[in-house]
Length: 545
Image (cartoon, rainbow, N blue to C red; front, side):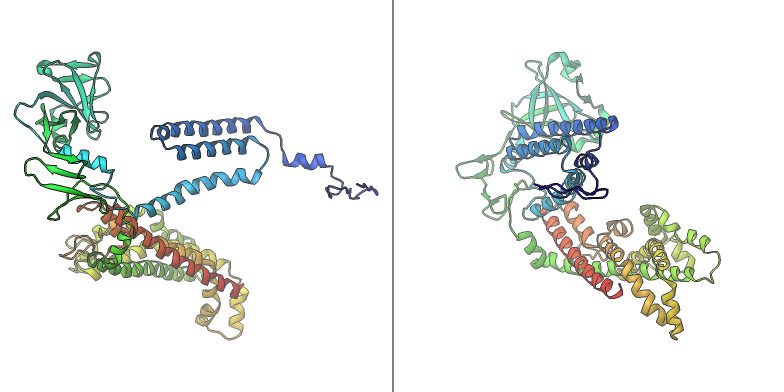
């Protein structure tokens, strides 16, 4: 080891390498470890306490469900966060970790969950496990038999009378005991917690809101559908004031892995490939269970004529809508920006304020206004121009209408960004083309437009991706229509995202697995188009930089 000092400004060296001119190691270290202020300490304690609280809140359900891998991951993540923020080291990680965790929670995890759902038959009739399906089949087949016990019934909720989960409060006629029942079964209530009126009906119960006749009548169908499993069968309502304990006529036999109807003798055997109980004649019970179906959903999208035809037709219109929405709005916005960029224009500030008004208004409200303006009978457009066009009743007029609405809503944004990009282009470039004898059009095509595209290409790509999945623009105007008579699930103005929404939540039954598969196709298409566009943008930047 050696040390050399040769006056002011000299560099001290040692076996550990140079530290810096005239700067002691302790001073340099002090710059990286600033003193902790009282405010910073309080904020750190509050945030770490919040992390600990969230971890404890999430741990109990994991323990109850015996999800040990998830619990271990939760404990490791919490311990890592405490280590990271209680030590003065790893300064960059303190800033990167929160964003990374939010990225995983709100981007990566939803995408992975959607992808995993695409390989299942998850949907109506296939939401739970096989055991859940067996319970649902047996409960739904309950019938009242002679001599079955009848109970005085009060309908209650565990929350809001209009939306809360329904609960049956029943009084045993033999013992007078009161029980609360829902889809999970009966639970005996303490006599001190309930008030029983005449006829054995419960009039009040701690933790429950007893519905009056009007509130119960409004939810009569839900009350009729509610089945409460019991040891001897199941409990169902008979009107709004009485309930009976019936017997299930369909029972599951583990020996044959089948469900048998005791009245008709018909048998449905479990099909593990489809997650359904299937009879010899092909009939399937409505209650099934969730299973992995591999690539079946993707195969149906590509090969099933009932799905592939609408899918590819919708895909073509989806591209036309996204390209048209982006292209038309950019063209109009750029044209207005060029006009107001001219030094000969006067009152440009007033024009700019007026032109961005559509951008300042809520888009959902404007979409509803435009829908009324296109009304055939009393719409402003037909009345103003003396037309009788059924805008939303014909395929091409409906498509033209939604593109026109998109043009009105979108051009102010393109006008704003084009105005900013034009101001960044040096005037010397356009003046040089004029000196060389170029016309204004030649100058725009050779200099202004390429430089605009270099600056605005990322925004145009983002606008294309947004419009490719712009569900509001379609759902709030045409709702995807008009629909052909033979296919109420796919309309002329449907985008893939509205088609997917209708698959997932349509009146014909939800198909979440199929909708997830279509979502994966949408993701792949948008990602591919965006990647190609960004690659071409980089090439343009290299040429004009």
